[in-house]
Image (tube, rainbow, N blue to C red):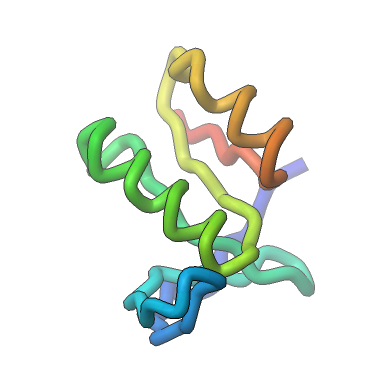
Length: 87
């Protein structure tokens, strides 16, 4: 089954912390996720986006190419999300 990504949009969202964040959001099917692309971003920036996702109460859509980092399973276990594998 192929995952079809819609356009990534930048959205201003207020988190549980009370802080407003600019969050990259992507729609997959009928659900919206915080977009994290490990093929284009370093691990520190990606983990920062995971924290933003937690603060705004959204799941993550994480794009990987090849071997996935060990922390991804913890993200899915704690806040949920999907992994999208590219070739």
